[in-house]
Image (cartoon, rainbow, N blue to C red; front, side):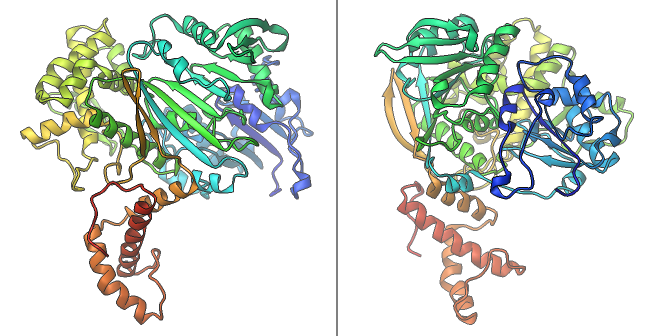
Length: 613
């Protein structure tokens, strides 16, 4: 066991601790079974007493080998022990993207302490290479000390016994989502429903408890609530089935712990049918029988979307297809614009599932005054000094800029007037100087005019600078710094395309839209089934994009230098990993043409037909 004396596993929230319950391993050839003593399972909802004390006690009891706790418990417990306590111990952090290279990150500081001040080992586990805010998870010098093991969704699906397909669905609606959820929710499937934040545009305005009650009424009639078994609702559907429904929206601590305790103890498929949640049941939540995730409202980051999708993609007997459905308020844009928006987003999600970094990095904007007052001579590589930038004058504006810009962008993209302006002939000046302040005032009514302007400037800077990572339909970078009518129009068009946060999306010419059907005066868009074959060709296409080579160039190389090289090397094909860059280019040309042919055969290509290779 590599001389490891103790193991500490840290997860973001208590419910995820279920993934690390007792497991028999020796029968599969491992040196020991995984056994967690109840006293040191600090994620057990039935025992909330003095977790920090038990964390410290664990290191001083020789007979105890494994402890499971939440990230918060790890942070609190580490305040009470010396770094040397982790000598010859293993610290495994699940959902590792919660850490940050930032000096103020508590979890990141713990990682650096264990790495630098003890002989402890660290296992970093995550389903996402990015945090959603562009901040590095690890410093480069720290990351270099890790041995990377990548296991992507293609490998996962390919190795599964039962689950073979993943379907991504986008359902657009007018009015309140509560009026349309019955037409989307399939109560025959094991489902997690994520309702929108009470402050989001998708919220009904009735409050989260009322929304939860209305969803339960949509499912059926409540016959009882079993407080002896976790406070689970027993709901009778119109066709006579009795379903078990869990309410994780409930804030009352005692009731919530009852529900979480029941979910941790589930052993059979019939133990649960539908879970309703708000901020929980996302990353790492373990319910292998989940077949469908129904999410209401646009999510602020691809990280969150991928985490939700992960809840329904666990392999399980009887589950061949997993489904992610996102209900979104319908913008009054033309159908082609909506199709482009959804297609770009589906491509981004799929790329994320393949562990590709598709988020543009975040930037820090400083005024000249900020720089003059900074005593240090060092400046972060992602910091830009902007002349004329208004300084943030209050804690409110600082909070919005640092933590809520994604949510603000969602509000802008869903504003009826903004969407109409973007899809029409409205100038960028009208959008940015008239409509954008209107949305900011509506979302944050307590801001004064000066504060609205400060937020508006930061919003535009964030959008425009990240726009430099976007390419046009010819594959050329868009330069928003050139003040022409064309670039002003492009800036606006990129807002509705949802592409200002994504890179390498426009160049990924794969059409994931399968069907477009009417849906309550709006549109329903479903992706093609993302099976292992589709994932493999998308993965190959992403790899191919590491080489800046057009189809025309690939054809020329294939018909000339490629065939000559193969002939000179006894029929052997060029290797994409060859140390000679010319050989790698020939391999990339062949791979590009091969991928193009496969995509067309699979119906995934919507690029105009190219000349025969």
